[in-house]
Amino acid sequence: MKVLLIGYRGQLGMDLQRTFASEDVMLAGHDTLPVEDAARVDAFLNENRPQLILNCAAFHRVDDCEDQAEAAFAVNVFGVRNLALAARKIGAVLVHFSTDYVFDGPQRNPYIETDAPCPKCIYGVSKAAGELMLQSICPTHFLFRVSGLYGYAGSREKGTNFVETMISLARQGKPIRVVNDQVLTPTSTMDVAAAVRQIVTTGQYGLYHLTNAGQCSWYEFTEAIFHNAGLTPDLTPVSSEAFPTRAKRPNYSVLDNRRLRNAGFSDLPDWRDALKRYVAGRAAAGRN
Ligand SMILES: NC(=O)c1ccc[n+]([C@@H]2O[C@H](COP(=O)([O-])OP(=O)(O)OC[C@H]3O[C@@H](n4cnc5c(N)ncnc54)[C@H](OP(=O)(O)O)[C@@H]3O)[C@@H](O)[C@H]2O)c1
Image (spheres, rainbow, N blue to C red):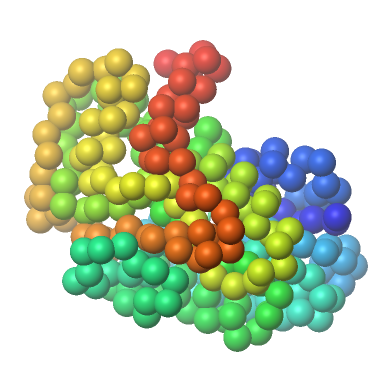
């Protein structure tokens, strides 16, 4: 199968690269295929004719999106539109990734795929609009909403991932304050990539929530990071009010992976298990 992987240097992109290694994979980045450039996207897909396109490109520095809404929309909305139009033209399957941040409502039980998005920040609005572009243009799509990603490559956009940031702060001996009133499911890019590899062969197109199982606050996640890494820093839970950010984050954005189960797949491993494997793997690779 001829596969085009866009955003291959990112954390999810790197794990997808490994997972699809047995296929004929073409790699594209910001430099070779800027998704916001409709003419280039059309020409590139027409020339290379992939059967499957994995799109990891995103503008997802959540606070920067508040001040750079046009740039966020260029990648997260119009970039998706460009890919969807070109994919439809050549009959390719388009795989795209969205976010739990399309939800920011009063709900305190996991969101299912049929719940209506209700984003409150520009990033969430742009990703929700990107979802609509994909769904309205390209019928042969897989849309995966993921959450709180961490992978060994670290986020290209953010420079690192949350686990590495926390371990680094702890090693520096700094007091650490983490919000305890935002609940989500932190998710390993390795587990997402493995599941994507299986689901995209089913032909059961559409929207899937795809996260590790269980839920926790960022504070509880941080406690578990330190437990697994054998670190005992000065860690304090704080409320979101004590930690003002430009973009409003959801208080609760846990995703029920219902469609995945209905399609005959098992739930992804629990977030604690995924984190344990990640921390063990980084130690085995000699990371401090
Ligand atoms: N990270 C999270 O916590 C999280 C949570 C929920 C959802 N998501 C979604 O999951 C997906 C993957 O996230 P990630 O953390 O793996 O991302 P990442 O590591 O930051 O990588 C993003 C990739 O996007 C590429 N890119 C950015 N702008 C582009 C453009 N205009 N044209 C082409 N490529 C462009 C970058 O390419 P270069 O390397 O060439 O610069 C980079 O490799 C995104 O859709 C994101 O919105 C992420």
